[in-house]
Image 1 (cartoon, rainbow, N blue to C red):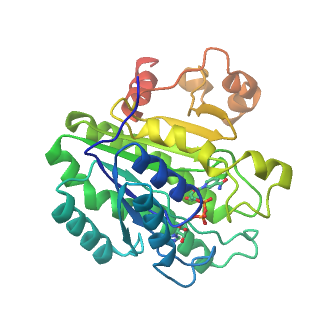
Image 2 (cartoon, rainbow, N blue to C red; image 1 turned 180 degrees about the vertical axis):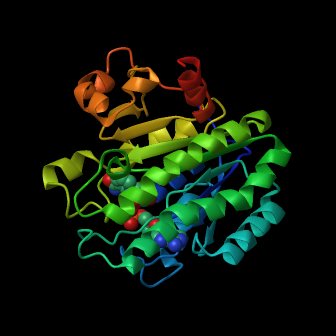
Length: 297
Ligand code: NAD
């Protein structure tokens, strides 16, 4: 099986460098027409320039592919709508959206201002929401759509100094879960990638020997599969340096007690049993989990 993207139109946000650039190049190499979106600011979100996106477009066209540059900020509703309308007019459809744009404002929670928190949530969470909302109806009407969210090990498992980033990144997993359900009838599939790669975002966080083996192109295969025709839905995949894993939100079997035992003391006494991971499951939906709780009554 060869995965191709001929006649597919893809928008990749934050594609002027790092992971987004690798996704854009890989999609174009396999036949997609690609919108290379990037605000072109600094790592903390300050400033802007279209030149980074244009350089990636130049690389794609030099290799015989088709691409256009776009400088919309992902959280600017009007600019994103304009981008989507332009792409629709020029290429007629939008099959793939990779929500990849991001910034960092790392500080301990004690030192973090609410502005640092809001800015990061605005780009990662609201930027992904804004871009997804702008293509959602297009994809539903086409009865075809593939959306990729970008989470992080920080969102899934936590990281010192990244409270804002972790909160925004795990929110995207929640967004994916509901969009997977709501998009199913329309063949709109939503997945999430948790990348690990050497980019300007991580250049001072990983040792040089590791950076060498962790180029963004080592993440692209997972991203491409997750936006392909064969894509699953509702999947969180970790990827980087040749490693590919899946992350799940699991539920333990827990305990079910009579009303007279519903006390904090029971919880304290049986906490290990509640936490026991033997036989844990992954409910398909929130409703399924609620149904199981009801069923146990
Ligand atoms: P990067 O800084 O190279 O890329 C992010 C890009 O997003 C930049 O080119 C930037 O200009 C663009 N951008 C920022 N704000 C924007 C906005 N408002 N509108 C449009 N574009 C904007 O970093 P990267 O490592 O390639 O990160 C890509 C994504 O992967 C991010 O969402 C990041 O959080 C996530 N991620 C990266 C790693 C890693 O190991 N590199 C790990 C976990 C998650």
